[in-house]
Image 1 (tube, rainbow, N blue to C red):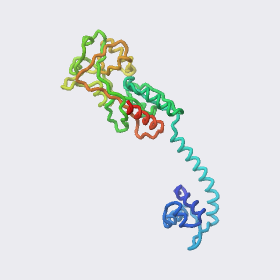
Image 2 (image 1 turned 180 degrees about the vertical axis):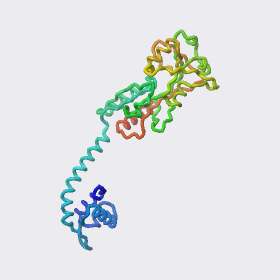
Image 3 (image 1 turned 135 degrees about the vertical axis):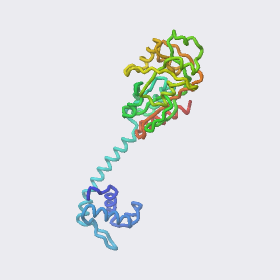
Image 4 (image 1 turned 90 degrees about the vertical axis):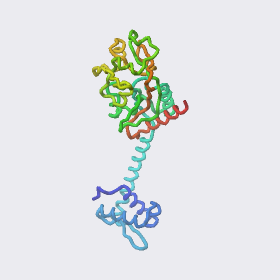
Length: 301
């Protein structure tokens, strides 16, 4: 039964071996004397030998108890050192924080500022920015290959936490420069049903519907083109848009990242929000520290 011995029972025994008094031991450990006695008996039963001689006036270690005290004391001190170092390492903010980006515009105007502020405050840490696959943008987050990511919303996934909102941006339709709509001042959301958009099978449904809806608010179906895996990067999508194969509902700021395309404002479509998202639970001290910096920077805007 010795394998069922608990660390608290060993610590209690060492305290009793030092005090040689149940009352003082109980007071030191903030227990009742009866609880000290019960724990000692449980330890003796598990070890199969008596540890102390008890009388109404004194407590004395048995020879077995004395041997255990001599060997256990240094062992527990060593264990305490190991645990103390492990606890300190777990709380330290150092190393590399891996930050995934769904798409560059999702980071918004503050993500660079947040990253710089974090690295300035925590000089033993760096942030590595990783571009997520458009085919399955949350796979690497779920597998633990990245620590958190900046992504578009909405996102209703039980294993993921949606944190601080980074940006809210007006919608725009990316088009080829010679597209019939390219010279328009705006495009109504209902007109999306007249054009072929893009389809991503592995996106969460709520996110897919927000970015590339399957129908208009009035219920008109929207044709969505599925493109092969491996051709789903920003540049691949931009090429297909430039060829006139598809139109792509995005945000106006995507013009800086998607090359020589026309970006026409979409009316009747809500702004697209982005946020920091991470896996449950958030135990990594680097992650918690980064989120604290993010909240400070965003609150001061």
